[in-house]
Amino acid sequence: MKVTSIFVGFFLVSLMTANPVLAGDPFAGSAIYAEYCVNCHGGDGAGEIAGTPSFRGGRLMTKSNFELSDKIRNGKNLMPSFGGVLSEEQIDDVMTYIRTFN
Image 1 (cartoon, rainbow, N blue to C red):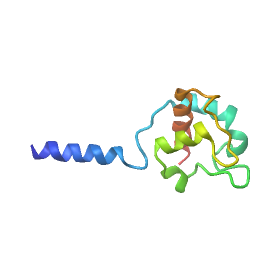
Image 2: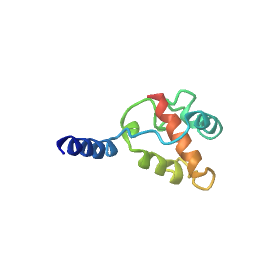
Image 3: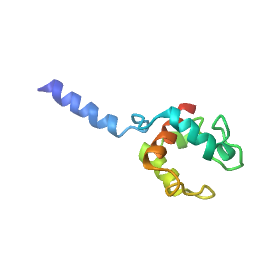
């Protein structure tokens, strides 16, 4: 009984961590990134335009998958919304890909 409680507790904590299990296909995400993201965020994810967030660590990459996909879907500041451009699967793929820059 005690082992089950520990496992359930660990499972619940793992669901709330900042770096959750990857949701999409990073290989498909790479192609999407090359088409839609590279001009602003750069080939290495460091950011090409002043003020563009870096995917190479830092506060942005501690965000949950939900928070990152929301930014891709709805945009923020100068970043346009990709919700009408990319499917939910493609959003998951590119989000998973940008997590490989860490």
